[in-house]
Length: 485
Image: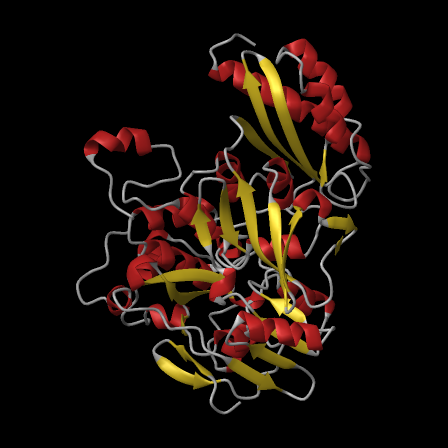
């Protein structure tokens, strides 16, 4: 354990007295870096946000904002972290801190260090640019400021007392990094490589294997081991439910799990790619996923959450499964004995249960090509952003000459598992895409699954929402075609 450590605010910090389950938040606070706050311990408030140096295209670096409460301290071995204290001082504040102060962007100040870190990540975004006079009118009233600042980058940071207008004003007042800015200069050098890690505190072990083969051997040898990628789900279990694992295997930086390939027949997405990375690499190539990504939690979560992790938890309310079901995705499963491919529709077997065998993990997701011509993702939640869905519905239809020739519909939140709406698909295929036929199919969709009542929604509400989603899709296609509703 003596050899492992993290560079924090430019200073090497050994990971002494850290357990396999200690969060980066708790470890940083133990160092006296108390700008990092605990507000919720589940990645919803952003009070614990810090910056991590992560690889960027071309071998350079980018500053990525993450929730320190959900990152295991051991997972940061060999990495570089900047906290609010590392941005600036009271005597020499960082540009972000200066603008927040000038705009009155804090009252109690509890959330402010997290806002500053998320704002700094956007401040250093390479492709952020000020808009010209000819673009100013188009930018006005959107979530982008005249300086190119994307307010959605702060969507995972919550403030109870200040109100968001002063924070927005501070963000929109930021210029470009000045010459001599050390954090800006750091972006020109490569990010730290992933470092093999072994930590044993007597009560639990944390291992970052050097290869997928090693990870699979460990997984096969120890049935109670937990795979850790972005830990946006496991971190909540550790923090709020006190869960502990005898062995935690970190896999998020394994090259074999970070593939991305667009071929003639399919798109392959490595299971350990974060949602932020996938969105960037797809660049709108899969419209259905492009609709989903902004609605998936917050940027702080998407910067860590992986597509394999979202599928591995097998939650019935996960956001990616309905979309991937509609896309007819398949999963590549790997073990020490080789690989196999399964249809995602056959992957879920029960509540948080899957076909994954002992010693097996998700290596990649494959989306067949070509894609359906008409797609949509509808997420019903109490908040538009940064919330868990009550119901999610994803549609992928082929409509040729006004006739539905194929239909795939994925649903979440209406059964013990994500499901395909097979009866509705059958009710649509071969029918004309008219209001009357869609209304009939909508009544079928409303009866799909076995929705239940809980604190998010009643069973009746979930059923009605399903039928409405299909009608909404029909209206949008008619509007796009210029047909009156």
